[in-house]
Image (cartoon, rainbow, N blue to C red; front, side, top):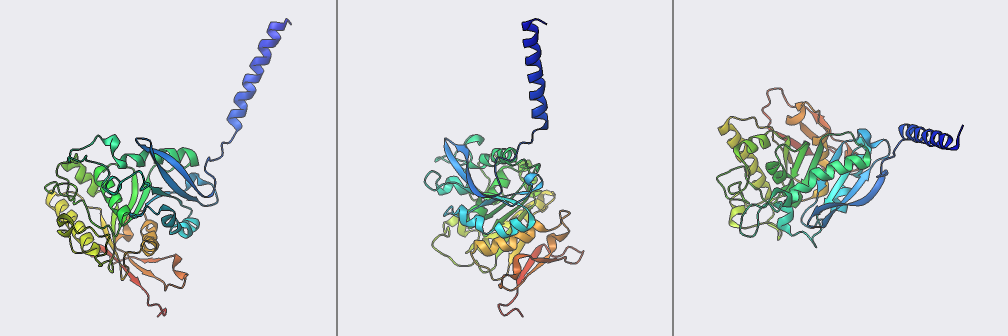
Length: 339
């Protein structure tokens, strides 16, 4: 056999071996179990930092929860709120930090949808546009097979979450919880943005699709203080004197407008009795919302939390009567003495 033929056969065998090696190889997830941070590309070379926690085990089948912090952008602290339940339920949690040094409050909470003149920006300049590409990147980095993600936001983060759904009504969201938002963009095309949807690219069809997202307006009944962080502009005060009142107003307006237009309304309202502007306690209660059965049977659930002795990591969910009268899930906190 001549040297050229031997060389050709050798190269062929090496190629076949390489293919077999690739076929049999397993590619471990790029993000290992535990806690860490990862930057993601965002707007105009202003990266967003994801603070993440991945519990032990194969992440392929784990759901993804995206968490959005308050105006202080304390993503690490908000991640802390979810580690216990994420470990128990095998969730991957990613808390989004839009750094205050590179993103203004308006760019964070209202999505950078309009410019200084109130004119709509191109969609690719919205901060909302960061979320789905980040989801696809995280799927690649973790091997997750999930095709939908979950959202939780508190305070300023709750503003981001409810507006994200209004402006992205077909986003692949499984469930979303907007907890204790300071003020809202009403689902009303007759009210000027940012307090409503007039003057921005959200059509009636978009709004009707948004009503069919599984959004929960989560309200602490004790969140009634007018603190220094509360927006007291005329547009915000028209929604109510405090966060709790504004959440009730937003939900009721959505239900009324969907009823007027004759379209399904899948939003729910959950109240945490006695809870104020406390992201950790709201997150603990919100876990039960994400854990409710996927058929929606527990949307009218009453959630009874155990006393604050550490036994309340898991909420027991009791279904309301089948007449569906309870639009609002009542969350009752047991007395501190455990009675």
